[in-house]
Length: 390
Image (tube, rainbow, N blue to C red; front, side):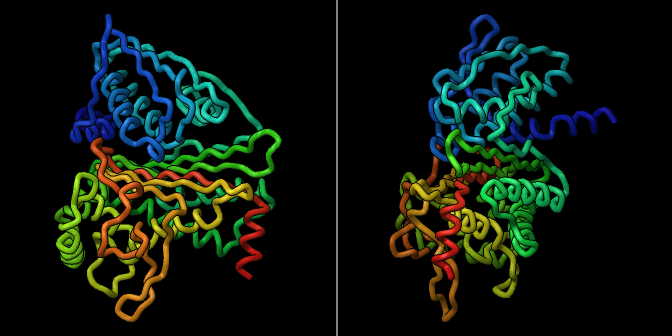
């Protein structure tokens, strides 16, 4: 019973330790100061952000460290993605230290910019630790939900998104809820079933309307700790059909490989395409549509009337894929059939290398898969899109 209790308590920690998710910290008299970077976001600044997350985890897990200061004074841009991962790391490390009867004292300051300040206090660690009950009537949050049954998590995410839509006097129809439910459900299913036996999965949201502004900005993150997409595709569980397809793609692209483009980002990009799944057994298998359809849906409505555009990213293992409407999902004719494709190059051709500003190998390793979405909800823009599509 004791071993089982320890395993359940440390599932996240067991996974992170197995992935060697460690970072260097300067220890002075059993104390560490963690300086959060100016841009703490896996969308905008993945390398530095992952390095900092590793430092946070290592410091929290080091039983010789008794004081940790989190310095957010230089942080101007805080992604819900980075904030949520920080919270999960710290909360699990605190459980571990309690289990080990090892106290740690955490303290620090807050970001200076209003947007980062709200994310930090309303949707971040102070909220989850119950340190402060800061409220803002212009903010709606989806507190971190984790490891719940897929249908329950999907329902909570959809209801939250609908609540945000209501600020613009719109709501999802029953059909719309069903469509989003299927897409979100597949993303959660992937996180649960493809992340390995130690996988844990999460979702969180933060929506704010700035003072004097009618429209709002929504952030939604869906992520897991576990195997990366690339690791999952190369596991023993992947079907021979998918392995063969992937092998052909790698052979086709090998001549394009360089420091930023190799088999890992190629495999990750390929996994996003329609009807690609590690569980797919034949060309008639209908798996593998949810993630790219979900992202494409938010990209279509996520701009605002002032021209500000949505930004989204997928970070998995050592791959970073950025969506900002420069490259979009388009239908291409393949073997006489229309197939939706996003290849991140001007030709939208998966046989050619992508723009490495948008799909690239990163040096730092994220232990799982993060889908981080930032988009606008603007009634005027939504209406203009509806009018254009009549």
